[in-house]
Image 1 (cartoon, rainbow, N blue to C red):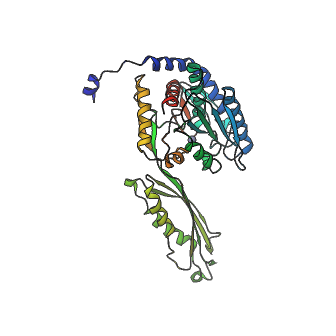
Image 2: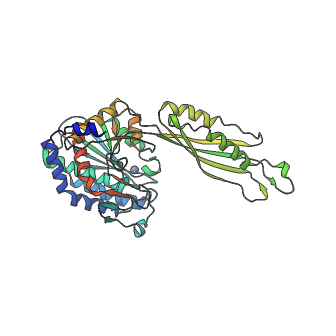
Image 3: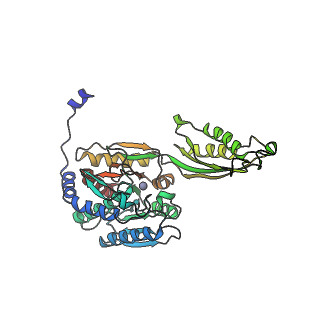
Length: 393
Ligand SMILES: [Zn+2]
């Protein structure tokens, strides 16, 4: 609205905010180098030795800044890394991040870490190695300004976020319970860098259908096709979609049958579900579990459930966003908020009632994709915002 904009008087920028921004502008080359360093240590979720190399590197980085490292051993995934920083007073703030990526080992060969204009490209640069680097630099900044951190800070770096956080979830929840607030360094939403104040809940179901095999030519009438039953069940499941209320259901993977001349004895569908509010979980779960066969000679078995409850925009979340907005305003930055469909470990901490603000990390595009990159110019103010939120959250 041009009329309102022309009347709008920009508040003078706050000297503290401005100085801090300048501090991080000066640190930008170092921050960029650190992000590159992190990206160039490949760390796919499913490769424990590689993930552990990254975890150990991060542990030593944070230790150098005065943090006390605690390694949580994990069997199937990389060890999860906790670093505690003492602070002057108050409850700790939890900085939550993950260092696993979705890219298999060797991806750097075809997708090298490189600067292109104002972008830094590379596997995991946005999701979320830049976020981890921002933690390090925000802590450094606070130490430079105050000597000691104004409050205790717990950094928790997870090794298996991209594959459901099974080894880290309990620790994340325990640490959140001991903290006054949780700041999640996942990528910001969109090119305008909005923080995330709501995330959908996420679930996974596997429906397995057992039919009765028969020769498709000799005995077609004796068979009961698991594939035909699967097709009918998928049509039922698709009706569970209710986009206006934020419920979406996607039968994303199917398999079944053995040969064209055999009536299929087995078929399987894997289904991704998303919900907007916690109360939708029970109803959707009940519907999934009450699927009944059309062909009574077929048997259905359903496994799975809601893995991450939604992060809802409750008063605790809204209060954190308000503080973040005020900090951004110090440097005439209008920080936006967004609700997104994807889940993160922030869903866990918000669901147990700890005020959580997500999307505090890098700004960019192409997470999990070939063109994944961050916008370099955004880094200083993201660091400035994080440092301020560590103090105020
Ligand atoms: Zn992520």
